[in-house]
Image (cartoon, rainbow, N blue to C red; front, side, top):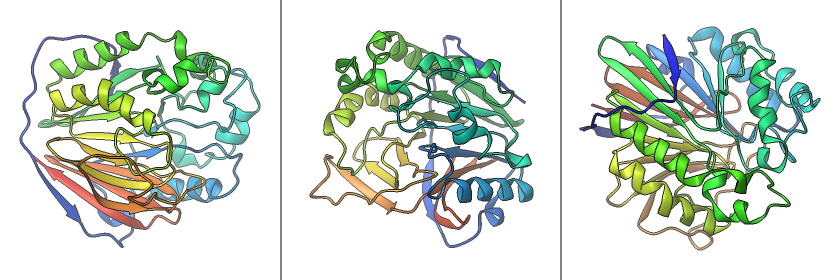
Length: 321
């Protein structure tokens, strides 16, 4: 079982691990483990482009392996967010698209920049309408026990208010500047300070490091404000969306695996080195295909796979402890 918490404890975390990229080109069902969850983001296109295809692929995957939950890493609603918890976009972007019986499981969402163009409180309030939409706060933590010796600590964070670009534009992103940046950073630090689970995963919408033509200031703000906390606590994985392609980036002197999940509807090209900003970054993998991420945990092995719209594994990355 798992439980959602917003607590502060007082312990420390020390991790020793090894990382091994694995073979791709297999179907996801061949690589399942004792516990699996999906990460999907940049979804909401009213079912157009690859959204319906990917939703069906996710559902069919659930017919062959057990999916514990789905982490929705922001931008469930393009382009202007939602007006309220009864906005028709909840049906056309979400309910009617993810209608497969195997997707009637818990969804743990976060806000993306497109949600911040609308009514962000409505995204929290929708938890009172949809049984599967579980969003207790703008940022929160989830604890999952896999077996007697393996556990997960997931942190779902709200990255838009951590970025000055959004805070400064109160017309386009009216709710961003209203959020207490320091309170969120203190929460993240306090949870990670006491986390004693086997694996720590932080999920945010925006990348800390990535090759992209999007405004460099977004990543620089997160590198200054968020990344020192991730490194301090030796977080295993930072998972994000936002740039609509797959990337696995390794950064010099950082213990964190920075993983960008592609869009589950409409992908975009990967930026070239000349176009992108980044210091001491090494790209281990990138792809401009649309799709989703499958995370699989078994004993002391954590495997992440990038999957395309048809459920083919494009890339596999395994970390062991």
